[in-house]
Length: 246
Image 1 (spheres, one colour):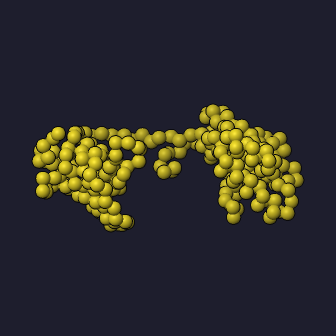
Image 2: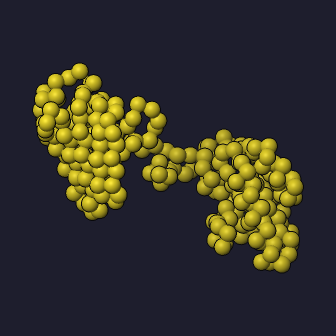
Image 3: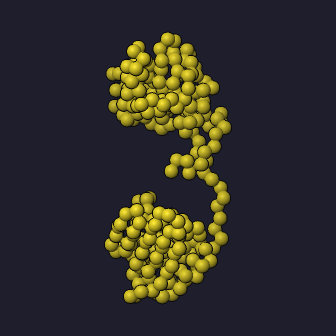
């Protein structure tokens, strides 16, 4: 265990130098802002980034139990034998957090960390759309594309067109299609048939499908087409960052 007074002084210095701070400790948390919350005493991992983003994790799971987005004013003081970390947002909406640290298991700080690269997200449903625009014959030899992302009262049709004289809606999934995807394409097909007053076609395209979803498609007369995502890896020039999906 670390001496709290020494750690508190180190936190002050590291905050002043905009270092990345990693604190493993026993603490309780009080939050006030968009809501109010309290978390009792427990072992937690506190991460303070140079931009003043503050994240608090429990020893398990990947989501933080609480956090403060930047920009923040963060201070550290000793009070009643504990370190009080106080964070307040400097932009609206108002948010503040008090972290009461009673025991420090470990403390480290890191200067001059840098990462200017952005993660590239590929093989998405949008990539599938782009591929199918260029290769409509994959859907059906006679498929004629009308549009993608067609807005209907039931939701957005990923791909919308005609096969012969019948209209067709195509639902895309970039990973394994389950029952929700199967139910969705059934709803889309049924809405299209009712509103056009003629039989329409529904097609679900994905790399794979669950057995219960396949049973439903067969019952509803909807086709499933298996799509190899690796086939579009180098054919589609699309780069998207992870921020778009969060």
